[in-house]
Length: 251
Image (tube, rainbow, N blue to C red):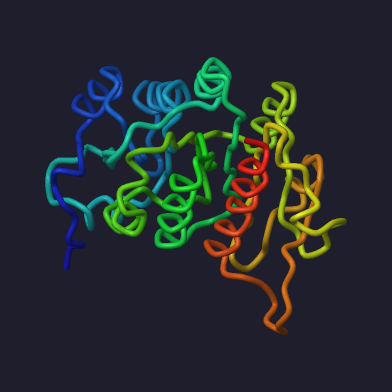
């Protein structure tokens, strides 16, 4: 039995997919049949990299389970939003003479957590959310619904490397901080009057070691009970509200 997927969210076939990518159509991801070789595979690799679209190689059976149409070994999943690049968003923030607040999601894969985080981010005035190309929750109907539409209002920047993104932000004058149960200071002691990027880790593993090694500062959210930690969307909301609280006191 084939999976029930909205046909309007798919483009399949070699020429339709290639033409759509070249015309700037936003894609959530591309899946290509394993073993594909030659010019098609080379061109898709080139275009997916150029347009920042995740490309996955899957068995033929996976393609057939998604559509009974003549997919020719390639299916593109259309995105419900347009993705941005952080290097394009950041100058616009500075041009408005605003103090940047960027949210970086490292390993958040649950769509409802993603949506809830986006809702809090929009309410708290965050300027953008950065997600990795791989290992990130999809922007789909569930995440948009949970976000109360916030995912269509705040720029979502999909980046190939969070490490490179953090280095770019730091060179651009952004103070990058991360929530970590082994953090050196409590959340209220962090100076959020600075241009800031907040890193939020996954529900189970927290922020990855590689990312933690790159941040400027680590902090811990104060807690009283014995439960290990806050839910990731709750933690993100607490962090962003602390930024709002500190900055409102400066006005």
